[in-house]
Amino acid sequence: VMIGTTTKKISIAVNECIAKQIQIVGSLVGTRVDLQEALDMARKHNIECKVQTCQLEQINEVFDDMKNCRLIGRMVIDFTANSE
Image 1 (cartoon, rainbow, N blue to C red):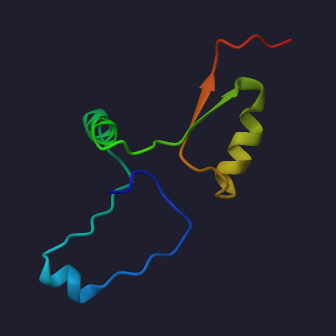
Image 2: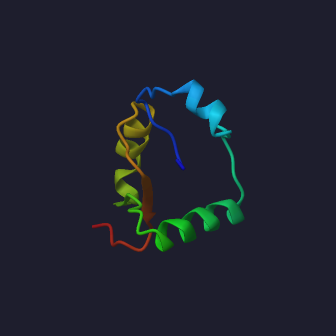
Image 3: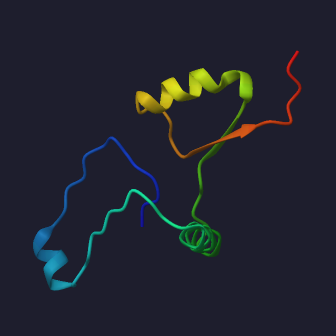
């Protein structure tokens, strides 16, 4: 199971997918329920979710990192941080 995207290429053993009836499905969107189910599964199976936090003042750097595929995991913007 992969949530999110990657810039890395993957190889797939087509014969094994056919023999084991494995399906590969992609979607650019998901519901909140889908996300909650993915997080529940990660918690149940001790899968590490990569989450980073930044301050609002760093938003332009974050967008640049997103545009250039340098982010891994999720980025959370902390709106409560004091900006001085």
